[in-house]
Length: 320
Image (cartoon, rainbow, N blue to C red):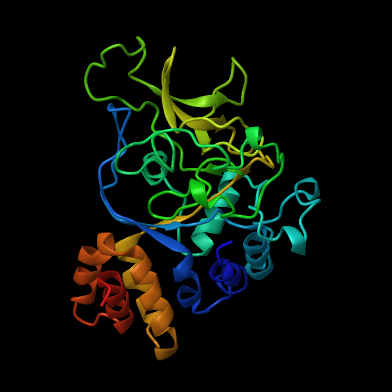
C-alpha cells in the first residue's frame, strides 16, 4: 500500500488560514503535461496547458477539515450522507456534496474542478485509450460493481488502475463532479461506420430518466456502477463515461477531484515551500514528475525572482 501521508496532512493543514499548505500538499499532485488526446480517433480532448492534478479523490477527512476551518456552513452535508463517516473511513472519498459545494472546496485549496475535456485527457492519456490503465479492460483495477465490494475503498487502493501519470481511481470508487460541458461536443469530420448522431457526445448514464436532461456531469462511475470504458460509440452517438445530474443533487456515489493550471499554481505558491526543510520533499516530487515537467520548470526557474523551490523541483525532474 502506498503512503498516504501527504494526502492526510492536506486534511489538517491545507485549509488553515495563512498556512504554508504547498509544502504539505505538493506531493499529492500529479503533473499532466499539455498534449493531445483524440478520443476514439474523433473527439478532441487535448489540453493546451499543463495541469497539476489530485492523485487521489478528495477524502472525507480533507472535507471535514475544510468544514472545520471554513467557519461557515458552506461544506455542511446532510447527516444521512455522513452516517458512516468515522476515523476508520477517513481515507474513503468524500461524497454527498452538491456541485457548488464541490466547486467551493476546490477554490478553498487554491484549485478548481476539471473540465470535461481535462478530465478525459487525465483519464485517457495522450493516446485517448479506453481505460485509465491501458487499451483493454483489466480485472480488479477499479472499485466497480463487478468487484462486489459495494462501498467506497480508501483512495488509491487500486494501484493497477492508475494512469501513466500516477492518478488513481479515474474509474470507480466515486464519480467526480466536473465543470458543466459545452452543449454539444463535435467530432472531427465524418466518422466512417459511426452512428448517425455521432456529432454529439452524451453521458453514458442518464440520471433524470427519459424525459429529463441535466447540464452537469459526474464522470468515471462509482462502486455501484458496472465497469465501463471511458468512451465508446452507442446508438445515439459518442458516449463519455459520465452521469448527467441536477447540480443540486446529492449522492453517496459522487465526489470530486481538484486540478490547477501548473504554471500559475507553481509560480504563485513556490515561495511557501522554498525553505531548507522542504528541499528533500520538493526534490522527490520533481523526481516523480520526471522529464515531462522539465521544460515548464526550466521556464519558471529561469524567471527573475524565481523562488529556489522551483530549482529543487527542476533538479528532481532532471534526476540530477
